[in-house]
Image 1: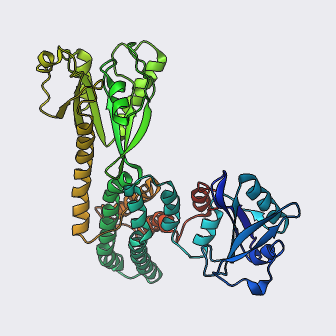
Image 2 (image 1 turned 30 degrees about the horizontal axis):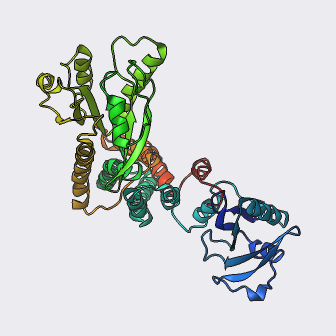
Image 3 (image 1 turned 90 degrees about the vertical axis):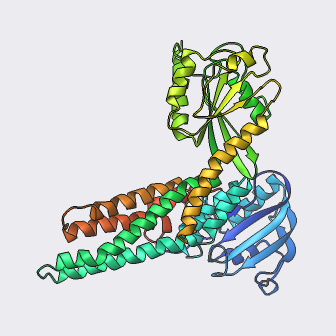
Length: 459
């Protein structure tokens, strides 16, 4: 099947100083020459060439870069036209290039071709969008870990061992002898245990990788009118949540992120939890609050320190058992606070007295939240590095594939009797497929299309 030549605008839509149109495919240079005022002999690979492009309706002075395959981003012949960055100008120039023989690129098609042509692993390709979307140092660090290739090397080593085990099984099935099944299982079991341990290490790294890539998720909870939304607004330093004297104002989760010490802290202001929720909407909000509690890294539980604990406060405390919690006694600016706060006995939790109105101890809250989660992550990282393992996963998709692969291996390793080699081969093949869905060695077309469809145009 003949490879088409694709083109797209590679810079964000909008007016700017410079805009780039990328062309990739066998006819990329020929298409350029049909609208560029230079001869082929004047275009030197990997050198910028100044000239003029013409569409028939207008001209523009541009810089052109030509990267002949396979030494290019996609592995194909690639041309990049650096024109003036007017949105309308770039669109008209792209339309003209399409009339000259190029096809409009699908989202992520340049990166997809790069992967298919062996220029990068699937994990490295996925990290491209993470790098583009990065908002803080930790996110860039997570992308760098993936780009360094440690994950790909580890996956490749696991695949190699699984293929070797499957080859031994196939040889046994082709030449059946007495007790040979038991001998084969004895030979491959240590390999499978080693792979199982490697998968476990990657699964453990998922928590660290997720926090690096997506930030620390903080659930902000409390009953209505304890100053929960006011404290949320004080933390993010803007009026994001609606604050009124009416109970149950926040009926949905409001999320906002801040950067703190190079890490993103994502605060999720939830619906106030109370027993007598009086509407379907408020009940749904409380249901979503409980979902946020299940998914968060840490809970910021806010209570009214100017009044004694209520039944609802006690019920909220009961729901927080087993969770990482920072306890905020709010309304410290009120006269009744000192007397009432004595009634709050919270030995299980780190407690901070706060005032949303006067911004008291807001920075202390941020620091406690950050330290509580990061210290736990550092312990996991220390354990991982002690095993000389610097591979890490940052993608939920990768985590799901690894969980499936581990489950398939567990079916073999946890079997109390010697299993049929046919069944073992089925489980190992399934594990190999799930690992291949991360590395890209055995990934299905459907998975590839789904991954790259999430990329932006021009990338």
